[in-house]
Length: 214
Image 1 (cartoon, one colour):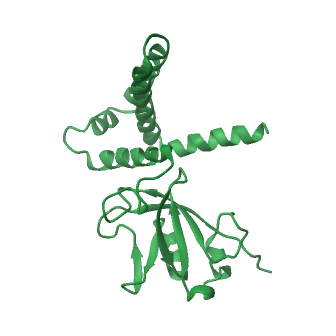
Image 2 (cartoon, rainbow, N blue to C red):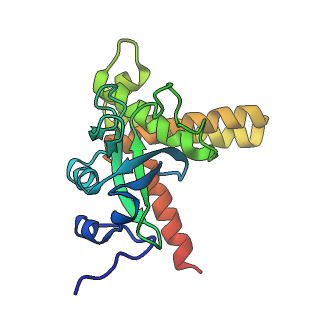
């Protein structure tokens, strides 16, 4: 017997048929949040749009004005990389976690509700910028050049920046410590990208450690 998808549990493609699309004329509101939990936009999905989202690995909506499926970023290139979908207790709304690749709003902002309220949300944008620089390799890009020099050089920079943070903590003021910490996080994000990892993975590890000690 098919079970009802549990509220808050990640959905699978097999759960689509058990969502309550009938209540709102075949559509479910889909709230898009980034990995940091900041709300980026609201769209609508029918069964096909949600199935295509799972299939493509990028968020697909049903455009109500055009009456067809619409992949976010299909013209702008500012796609939403699909991570997971969850439903609410009534199975008639969706919470989609996605990694933005560029501005989410058509007005050029990072979200349709203004800038994300979560202070750490910019780290997701930073990773998107790093990925873009690596892919496009614009002339004069420090990111592209350092990435091309290889993992050993990137690891060396992380070590150097870590030392700078430690020195700033004991010999410098607050502003210098913040600046050096920002340099360290940037270089760490780049190094992780070179290994196919993300800051989200690090956060998940910290969360798991915390949960294990409760």
